[in-house]
Length: 292
Figure (spheres, rainbow, N blue to C red):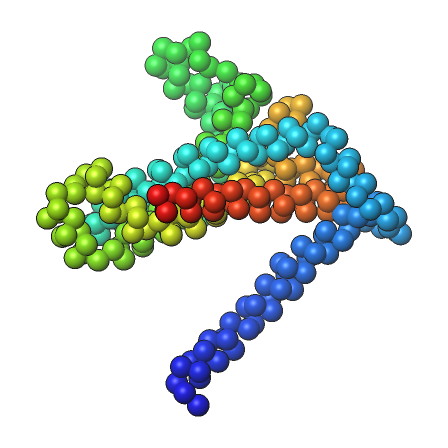
């Protein structure tokens, strides 16, 4: 048997346990959830088949559309915040110095913390009476800017998105540093000889070399934003008056607060469909960018 064939067989055999676990705990539950989305079921007792009734109700519920709008705001905020900040920090911290290692660890630290802890910390920061945010604004003489950050529908989605972005920059920083370190030094030398420095080098050389990594990071960012739950449920619970409701909190509230497991399963299926559509759109746009 050829060494290449033996190598491929060994790789397939090594990946088989992980693949089986992925199928059992991820793929099968997705189809199972889609199946129960066709039923009116409260989690106990018999389930009544209603076809697409749950989906029709979802599309007619204004709270669902509000949650979708809030999620799209969060997706846009995450793409505009997490990816550029992580890439900028990766470019600045690429050298393996003691200072760079310290800053990398500091940026990655929020990812290590529990999301519940992060939500509690930022809940105290945003507190209208003794929160740090209003205290700093008052110290700067900007009393007119102080407000109840998590209760004001005009700004509470922005307030919620900041800690989510803060706690998720770290992983993308590590990803981008790894991608930048894989760029050959010969390419850097050739760029310098051709006069490509600064922004010109970033746009013409660096970004094209790591474009695949950027695309993967965008996919992770979009899917992660659509699954956002912990921070919001801790800080606002989706309120007030569903002004910070997200798709995940909407699904949770309908599933576990009012015991509509069939309806919640339909919502989870909708989240998967929306994620697939957004990721497909992102691939279409980034593919055109690469061709251009």
